[in-house]
Length: 106
Image (cartoon, rainbow, N blue to C red; front, side, top):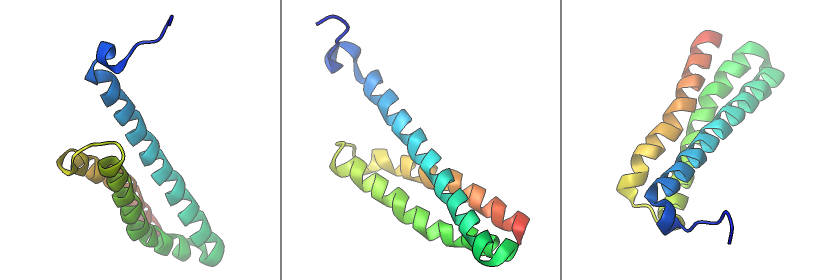
């Protein structure tokens, strides 16, 4: 078929590009969830509520990042040792933004 190539023809780089795209999307979702958390906290209790909800975001996001790792290990066929650095990155980037938000709002 015209324009169609198999994984074997593209090599493993294509699979890694897809993994990097998925990782970027999940990190983006983390920022969206953080924004929703901050907004909800502000709506409920003003600036102190937003600061508090920035901290509430952390365990929620850790569970979500862990679920992402579990999906990567079980469904995508990656090993736990391959997925663990991705877990750290997926969790740490939005978590750092949450920590900075807490620090600025507290």
